[in-house]
Image (cartoon, rainbow, N blue to C red; front, side):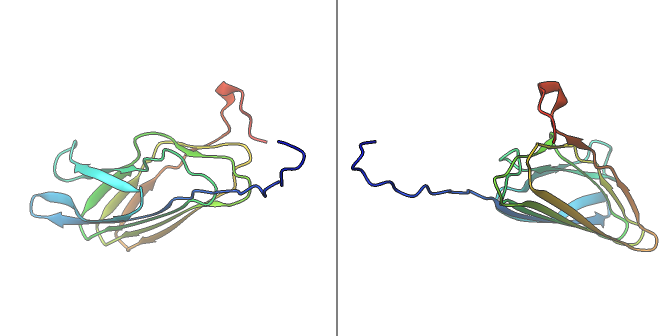
Length: 165
């Protein structure tokens, strides 16, 4: 830069993802199905699967950016209707990246009707050092509903010598 050139202010452009996914599972005559799938942004279910047979509907939640960064907002809503059985998972670990300020958020709302089953079994979440992240889960279970849930959180990446401070 030459001494007479004016200095321009540095702009901080934060590209944040806004994503919503709403799923509805129902019991039909020949098993459980994904009856409703609505999405906005890069959060989706590619397709539903039945590897255990028609009784259990598997859905793999995809977030193509492959990580959650400062400013990202993810909203996941799942309704499992009466007598339905759904299993939700992810194809790989979620990564919560460092942020220079903005918070990344994930809000999940699960509603499970009477005699319904929901299994929430995502891969682990890796939280990087200096991330500003908040994840919340709200679960409404009917009297005879069942939910199995497992959330694994890894703080930092020890194998890569990336500690979580």
